[in-house]
Length: 139
Image (tube, one colour):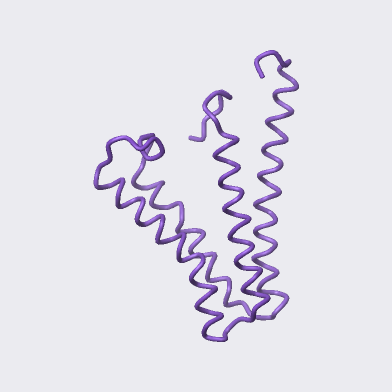
């Protein structure tokens, strides 16, 4: 993209940001619809896991980039990976446990899990969009 004019590059970056915003908004809408359509607000417990999910990365990782490149790791990096993985599994487990206990229905479970996968898709797209060659940084 080095040969494109600056205004075209800025427009492409704005489009990427808009696409990520649409993905996150779709995930939030699915989350709320899973509760509102079935008049059962227990699936909102998943929001707690969505809030807790990035916390280990924010608290323990700092500005060290060794988390993604697989270099030498300390015990704090291992703790961070474990807590992040536990939060991600909890985001799937809460709706499944609620369905197993017959607190929510199949439709709410499907919407909750689709909301989770839309959020995961948004995170993966953010990682691909935020490459180091673009000149933008995530922190």
